[in-house]
Image (cartoon, rainbow, N blue to C red; front, side, top):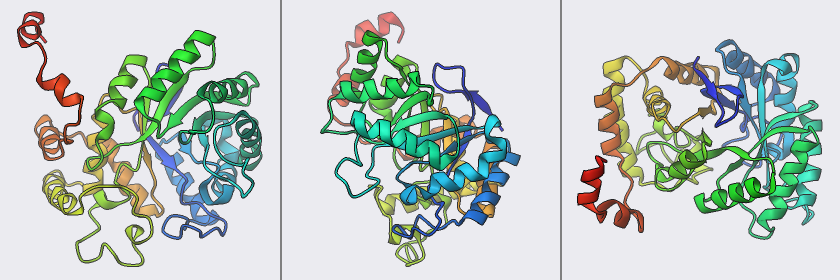
Length: 342
């Protein structure tokens, strides 16, 4: 297993992390996702621990909080050895107050997560989404409060725009508040949007990047075909939220399969190894729900893609330019750039 520190902190985390989104004790509201019972979850967590993973992720909204309970129980005997991340922000109940990033909801939610996880502290507490109804200052003050109380060690964000993170960090620094340490964002060969603005912002502030859905909801495992993509048993039949061109996706998988065959690896390992080769990436979340899937994904830690293979995959999936990025990139002062040696 590979290890690194989370952003500009001293917290050591494994570069492959384990995501518990599929854990459930009966909630089947998202049947394509919530499908791993407690016994299977315990076995998967044990497999991850044996492989050297020390970073585990869940959220209060996953399976009505059942994911937190099951993960907490599975890690109970090893609590002092692991880093647990959970999230706040999505709706967790019918009352209007049980959603968002208000001070009330954050302070209430952190106590509920602690109870479900069966722990005295949360290592990493993440704002799961943006809240357009709550002033940013209120959210940041509440996150600072849970850190100062000792209930949380570090804070992060997930699914936030680059400008809002930058604004938040400036507010945090100016007011002596607990700082964001990292962002948990979607990043894959089929979803490279973070390269435009999020990653440059993270580099500026020294933030870490934890990647969710590195296999694009399983598409980059290579198990789907044009014929079976809509089968009822497939995740894409009930949870197709990632906007990418499926036909281009199938062509990419064919290119990846050629690399995988040459390296005696799987398509999924190639996808994860590509992310691990990115300097900006701190840790990649594995969301396997079966032992053989997790075993295969873990093998990515030992796959080092060549410069030629990385270049080929990069060229295959270049994100379409958007404004003002294309203006900045294409209409720079070339004589000055050349004089500065950039």
